[in-house]
Image 1 (cartoon, helix red, strand yellow):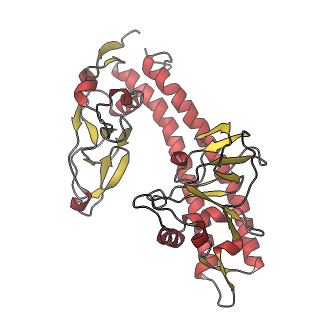
Image 2: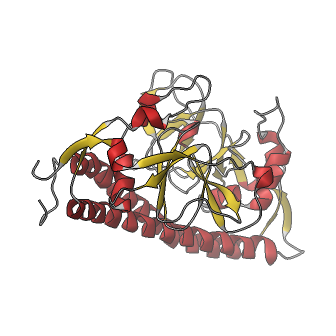
Image 3: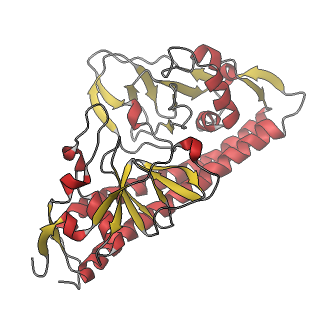
Length: 367
């Protein structure tokens, strides 16, 4: 392994438990509060200088996050207090290559103890190698971030057009209607028991347009069924509040998928473009209405399909519908193309990460 050396994780970095900060004590500011699964709020003070790294200590174990601005390290995290001369960006990817879940010392709530992971045996490359490895992986992540930004911009443009034409510029003489007039909620599809098809669990529904990962094939038993062009809307608290929604895009346009009953299936009727259901599902006014329709036991309340169908909406004339359809027909392929590129780059990064960290794959020009 040349100049690579064997040592303990505690010789590479020092991890420190984060600092308590209840939400009620957060003071309005622009300092991100780093929780076990990312940013959980903002505060007016920081505990840690950038660049900084956290890993999940309680709840979500071991998830590594890199912060390029000063932040508050919450007590649900461990943060790197001392990099000991190592390259910060490399350490971020270094920590991402570990499976820390095996060191869970909690019972009901998974918990990670820094004293249990500091003695881990690790293999550390010299600083030039660290910088070269970090450059390869960060370049991939930069490309992924750029594609995500492009899709957010495309989504925002589509949402703006919809709101402008369907809400802000709605005319008094437009037909008064309900969501159920233009959208099928939980439409009926046919799958036979035992049939193999794509399955999507509720936990794998994201907050972005597409779900390129998280699908797997399994036998149909019972549940919600959906097809290409449908929108899946999380119907339980807090998933609905957090915006868990996705637009279904199968490579095989004839495929039918299925999954949890904990989301609603929305499908646009003719002549509306299928993507409009996703735009409606992401709209704040609609979400507020959906949340108000919830019923059921505390903590697991569900938005009700029969109530959501009654959401008021003005139906524009056909020429405006067709104009929006034309705009979306040009936007959707760009969103899909970017999502496919993201999936390819993520697979490449995730494949390279363990190989680069073990020394199996070397970066050209360094030892």
